[in-house]
Length: 355
Image 1 (tube, helix red, strand yellow):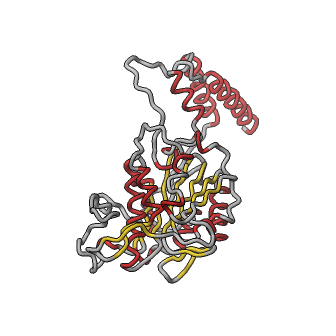
Image 2: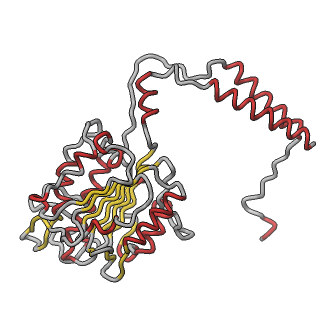
Image 3: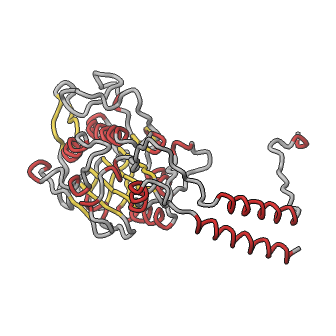
């Protein structure tokens, strides 16, 4: 029996190799084949975090909801966006417009809207939950919508906003995450094959200090301010008495609003969206861990979910070059299994004898 099993395994390996060798893309459109070979990722995810609380931090929730709206418009579905909001400004009793959040004094767009799906709200936004989310160590019973189900083909956008300092970001004004903890979490992501490329984007004071400890590959990082600098707000809405949005996110959003799913904007352009005369603080960029030239990377590689496609009117044959060989392979596998007389026993889903 053991000898027969070994023979069957050898046959299976040989036939599967033959099958893979026969697979070609010669019958697919040439442009499609070329785009697939160039692509470095298969799916896009976004983790968007507002780590601050209290009404005077209204601008931080406007920051994160603005980025949320942009990535959804460019194609990332809610099922692949994890949104963390430490305080719900839309329902704050000080809000003169209940259920609404705006990112500018003109009140042009309600970024809270009717289709915002918040995954972590209020006191769920903690350092522990954030690290668990990134590393895939969520607790038993965690809803699927609260998990980052990425893989080795995922491009991940991580956006953080709130109050920070040299080497830390505050959560809920009661705890903080350090740059070393962030680096360790990202290192775990890489070791566990949870991302292909990662864009780390942070809008807070001394934001560049948060990416200083990164050592994992394929990371492109951008921060609203260098170490020793503050990130400043953009403008106030007198009707609510608080700042509406931060400067860096305001200009980043201004750029993203011009981007179309089929546009040719690149990450190199995005990294220059807020010069010092506009941001007042100096935008920090780290590219030494990133293997590609940002000028050759479409912005939709991180902010969208766009795959190269080609519409054709004719029929395309994507079957094997020789269908008879495929049928022969499957028959040999079936005969091998029959000779081994394998039996698969499934346990009952509801063991009635236990009741």
